[in-house]
Amino acid sequence: MVKNNLGLKYLVKKFGESLQSEVQLTSSKSESNRALLINALSGNKLELSNLSAARDTQTMQRLMQEAGQTWDVLDAGTTMRFCTAFLAVKGSGQTITGTPRMCERPIGLLVDALRKLGAEIEYLGKEGYPPLKINGLQEQKAKRIEIPGNISSQFISALLMIGPSLPEGIQLQLTTEVFSRPYIEMTLGLMKRFGVTADWSGDTITVPHQEYTGGAYAIESDWSGASYWYSIAALGEDTNLLLGGLRGESLQGDQEIVKIMEKMGVQTTYSPSGAHLTSNGRLEKAIDINFKTCPDLAQTVLVTAALKGVTLHMTGLESLRIKETDRIAAMQAELKKLGATLTEDGNTWKMVPGEVPAKIETIDTYDDHRMAMAFAPVSMLQDITIDDPGVVAKSYPAFWEDWKSVGIQIEEVS
Image 1 (cartoon, helix red, strand yellow):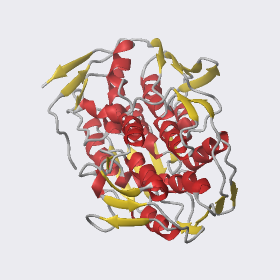
Image 2: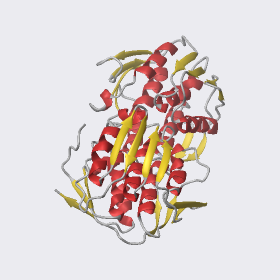
Image 3: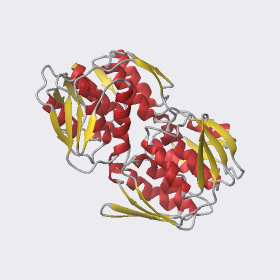
Image 4: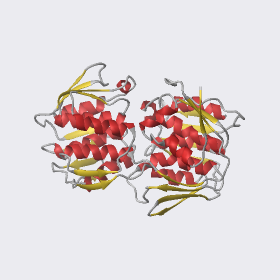
């Protein structure tokens, strides 16, 4: 695992006050990237507003507009998967590639499915991994595709979104239990918003051939980004926070943070302005959580629980192995700096809090945006130094500026 590559560190000073503030959150990267793919497949009929400023989304937007022969997704996993599917129906010999880490993240199951549909895809390096050369399908060779439900939901979402553009549509048979179901439901919800009907019956999702319709759509604020503010609310005293742009009825699976943090002291109410976070005085000392529908919340919840003395029993963390880094190994290393231990037994994990040191060692971020943001709320209790803080640009570029806007002091250190 790479620990850092820039040498810059941020010292986030202990806040130690009651946080009474309002934050306008960054927009949802998950919604933005799906909407951009649907827009491209529709022939640019959509009027999208409030698109995410995340690097992943900006990269996808640039690629869809420039349409060159080499598509470099940088470190954006979602962009790699969605653009691979797009090129499978619209491509003409383009190469798609990314950072060295991106080229270590498997894509074989998606490529196999696209080849069965009729796309011509060639591996330019290691079998099963980017970079790829893609020619769009000239003739659809299959309609029914079998694919595991416990793989990345982005593979499934990518196939579903190109489904209407296929002459015969698509029928996905999910051969295992479905992980990250809310992300698939988000995809189907956005497709429906733009005129595409689908049927999910049992283990089969069917999308007939049809056309996306146009229309205006404003992207919701990001529930993944909200999770770090929930951690602040849980670790602070007498917090009263308004997170602007969040909806009570959301397509985003990471809204699950509301239920999780309710057990660690945070109450949520909604208004037209967004979500209001206040303290509820509740603290459960042991919590069971299945993260299979919301794996991006795991790091934030682990840090919060470790600092509040809460033991976690967890399932559904398998996908963390193939994220920006091996997030399980990274969390095992960094939680030790908080005095906590994370152990694994088959498909179950346990986090046991310990005594938090008076001075915490610098937190390494492993080229992973969520490592930096998950550990930043430690500053509610004491000073914390974060290595390579610029990694937040991948999903939440304004993260540190938003932190400063509520009065948290941050200093650059070497």
